[in-house]
Picture 1 (cartoon, one colour):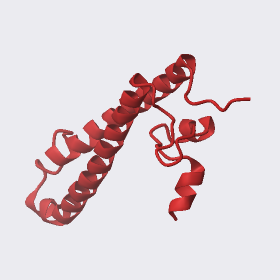
Picture 2 (picture 1 turned 30 degrees about the horizontal axis):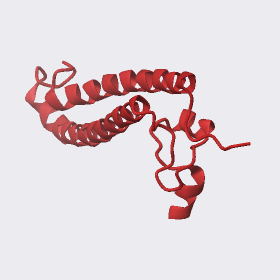
Picture 3 (picture 1 turned 45 degrees about the horizontal axis):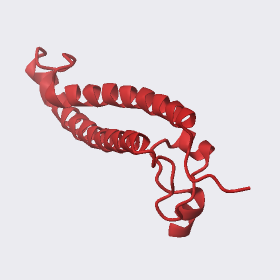
Amino acid sequence: MEEKKRFSDDELKEFKELILDKLQKARADYRTYKSVIDHTDGNDIQDTSPTFKVLEEGASVLSKEEAGRFAHRQQKFIQHLEAALMRIENKTYGICRETGKLISKERLRAVPHATLSIEAKNGQA
């Protein structure tokens, strides 16, 4: 039996739905992190007394830095998901960029933006 070269249109549709769902959640998380950074969440210490403000300043800066890191990671995740959608449109989704073989469905369900099969990923270590 000949080895499959690409996923069928129905399989690609299934992965597209999965990716769109993850993309929607990722964008919502990104907006949340950005609101913490931009102080648009309304949950800060702006209206409290100066004593509390001094005590909370350090925590606020740390929280902003952490939110910034999370926002950056989320932005990269969104970019990877959008790239996966482009591969679906091009019908190249799920093809390992190292081996040229199909990535297992199980791996793609777990990591829908994967571009390497498990074998290729393990070979990088």
